[in-house]
Image (cartoon, rainbow, N blue to C red; front, side):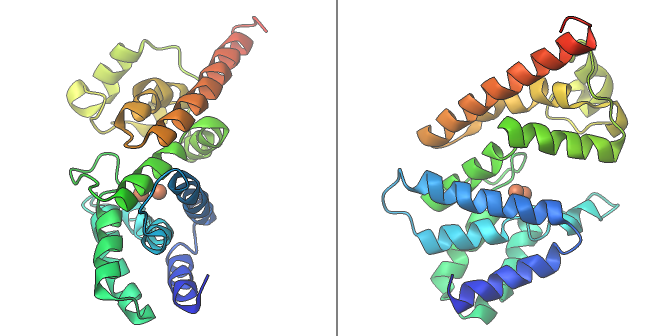
Length: 225
Ligand SMILES: [Fe+2]
Ligand SMILES: [Fe+2]
């Protein structure tokens, strides 16, 4: 990592200082991006590294905005621009990195166009799956006071606790959500949304791990194991 990139890393660490969880996620996404890039040609690795480092820089600001109006992808790109300029990166690099950040969000309207943006999107989603995904889901669940497991029918639950009664609608009462419901509603759909075949293969493998975990959890809770 050269001096310019170290400056960028410090800026991200400063923003995410109260969130060790976010910074650990940033490094996992950074490593996943580089792994996915091995199977691609014509990737600008510098743009990919910078975009993965900076992609969630506005995450804490979105989470602490009670109005719910902050979109961390849009704000993150705006925050990244002066940081990259201060660090001395050329305008073309700044533009490409910001475009990756703007389009990394699962629920966002902006769609990744460049290969670097697609790899960032894919790596970011993969990090919510597998053993890491289970651990992350339960860390979040603890914060919201969620139960360990819900037996509720998924369609009934979505109709009851999602705005508009649709899977993509916002959750009304966070404490009534559970990791296994999130798995059924959101995580299982991730492979279909990914851009690269290598990311889809990793995601599909990670879903197998999650499915086995939730099956076993249910069996134990039911006294069957
Ligand atoms: Fe994000
Ligand atoms: Fe992220």
